Length: 408
Image 1 (cartoon, rainbow, N blue to C red):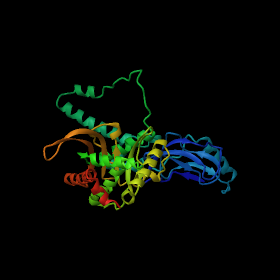
Image 2: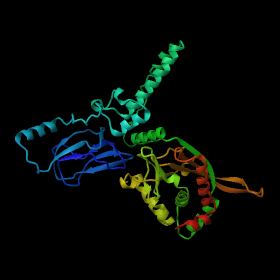
Image 3: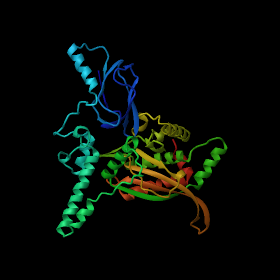
Image 4: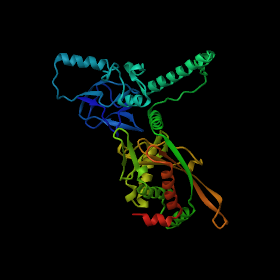
């Protein structure tokens, strides 16, 4: 029985093996965990589909595997084997450090996502020498090839201008100090880097900055707290976003370039960017438009706690249509948040300050002002659309009665 790596995420094509729970020769029961794989921003356990004996393990921790590749082989007693076959399987188990290679396409070993990245960057993958296992081309190889090509082009231009000395400077290596410290670039940190790099290279980001007077909202929240209703301020933000997104659906959309369509999502599933010890995780709070403030608060708290404890499931991190980041408790005034591809927008809430504000009648009062950063995909929407969307969202926060009139 071959245990293959299957797609356990939305469009996921590869993952990194974190560790094994078994070794060759172990007896395993059905549904018992075999290994952990780092996929897109999460670590997932792969259980055994059958009961039996582990006969071969084809990859080592740290290896990158592609969907469809065989990871482990299990003898479940259902296949009769000849002596020659048994010897062959025994030899396979003894040589597990040399696993079978994935199929080549156009003579090149590379994951589907890596090939897509090469096409998007205009790089001929056939010209790249892979540094991965058995010459496999990785994403890092593509970026390195692209950077080297750019450097060669710059150097050639400089030589033509008689600046040959610059070439020596370009190739100068900076020595590494003996006391420098290295941090492993792998696991969730590496997945975050890959996702963000892909997003920035694919999406033309534009960030709109604004301010919201949340004085009235904070006062109402205090009133609720005094009667035993402890609702997070972010729950109000999410409810306001649901209303604003319904009225401006282009920001709850996904662009499909191949089919040349913009799909407007009629479901409102908000990703909650969460700072954890393992890195940035984004659990998804589903159907916020149909939930009460109390439900949103409770589910948001549960998802955040599971993220902090590393207990999120694959399903709890899939299907987001928009993302928020609440960095206010940490401080900071503005930022340029990166969109969670293939979504269209992400909004960050920053710290709230008590500052003097001049009213229309020229009187000066102290108000609670929160800053907002909203990044959006300029291929899908224009700046004027973003301003109208954010204005509506701010209106709902500044005048809570309007927010409550829209609640379902």
